Amino acid sequence: MSTQPAARHDAHSVGAGSDAATAERLAALADRLYAAWAQPAVSRRDELLADCCVPAVTYANPLGEAAGILEFADLIGEFLAPYPGHRPVRTSGVDVHHRRARWEWGLRNSIGQLVLAGLDVVTFTERPRLETITTFFGPPPRPVYTFGAAPI
Image (cartoon, rainbow, N blue to C red; front, side, top):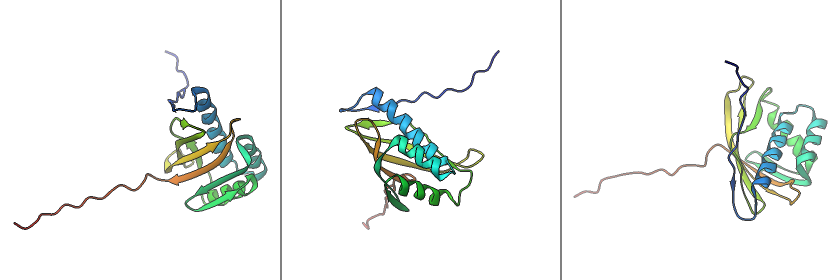
């Protein structure tokens, strides 16, 4: 019996104003974005971001925000400095409609353990290139229910 390497097959959700080919292109853009995040060399990070983002890209996460590729590249360096060897990866397919998309991601340490998960919500140009990126860390807060008894 021969062994074959694992192959990734993403399922994408495509809504109005988009198509499967756009979802595939956005998945590739997301993967390039995370390649930039994993790049320790600032000049190479700039190149990778220029390949997937518009020059005036805006980025925001709960800890900071940036405008433009150079600022974004610097913010990535600041964010990952305390986490050497950590690499972000896309962990879901892409959900896309009307030039907007979202996907889940995870930050993995040097041995592949997930240490942080989140969601990216983006807008993109027709070309497509990422125009705005909004990152959320962790799952959304869940509602808390309290139950009590009323006196009879």
